[in-house]
Length: 150
Image 1 (cartoon, rainbow, N blue to C red):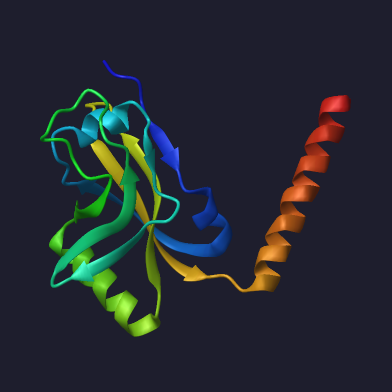
Image 2 (tube, rainbow, N blue to C red):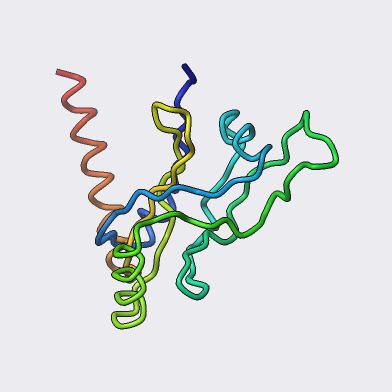
């Protein structure tokens, strides 16, 4: 049908400790899905925030569709995320009580061609945690090189 699109937020995995993951639908305008299918989106600087009882992805960049007309979408705007009411309540409770944040991890299209956003309930890492994760990556890379040589 369509090629699958996977746009990752690598910075979030480095800066945050991911506690729980959710898959949410996104409310999009007409030309936004076309830009996403072309792979012209960026979620590295985005975050999620509650407005009332609804969850919004803020600062998500979806490039304007090049073949669009005057009804083209804005590149950076708030986009509503679709989750179950129970999931929204649990997320809101944990963000308020524990001081956690909600960060987009991956923007992808499913087998039906519908755009989904994988969000994570995260806790910020300290600098020493970041150094530890860099050391782990280096050792893993070195081990892979050694394995490949033999």
